[in-house]
Length: 390
Image 1 (cartoon, rainbow, N blue to C red):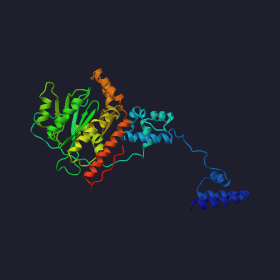
Image 2: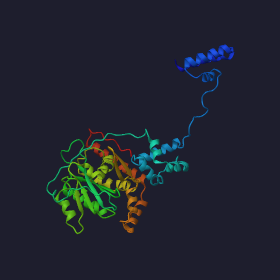
Image 3: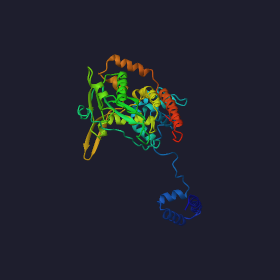
Image 4: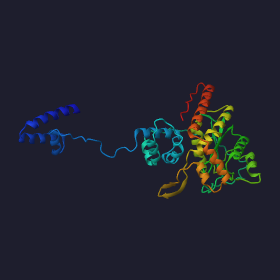
């Protein structure tokens, strides 16, 4: 029975109940209680016409308004869809640059007061998962493999300068032919990451890219851990790292064990794939435009404003692992807290940080990526490339 016939039926019973005798009222109470399968007290309240609906919604009133959630979603998008723990840590950095005419001081205080669990709850349903496909182009080189030891990198480092390196292929659906590769260089201690685009993954080009990265580092290069690709295990990089006054401790991972380079593998996704996607960049001129993005907007955005988490310890309980992570911090914050950097190096980083605005960086990054994708679409009319909505 639908709601309308139910209301009409109850209305008839109510009129009979008001005019009926005590015996008839007892009969109507038993009838409604049996048919509706409710308690007689409840049936009595229905028949006398008592309002059974609560005057107001039960439970606690919402602490955060709809406008607050709206601004939270905007910040979630601006922060590259970071997890709630990272958003909590980055909120003070981003909120002082976030401008909106509808953003009141009360909402600003609410955003700063939110816990990571609250952020996760309010953003639930707004997040979307995208299916990703990985390409691989690693080849094992046997020329210098005996000179470079195979051993896991010491991840319990207490100072910056110990790097992992890897390359990412911008090959589309095929590894045939020539195309652009991205070199990812990640510091284990701080998470400081730099990228360079190179043409064809040649050993000389990768060596030059690493040399260019080292010249711009805010600290010295102490060790390097790479995979077994021929772009790394080659004479140019060996001469550059080993035949100089301050030799770099160079190790390589075990073949077919990508988890040996877990830190840089994460950055291959966040810094490379999320920025340039899986399209094929098959012209050398793209290298200049990609490096312009890598060395300007992305370099400042990820190293100064995007927090990362570090694994503190991992305990095995039965067949599972219990992991404990440190408080999210940006690479810049970890370097400022490090005692390995001199005060002059820290002051230089502070001056750079104070000159940056994350929203301006995002806006410039969006413009450059859209121009690059438009150019890519013109070169490949049959391939549809969506504009970036950062």
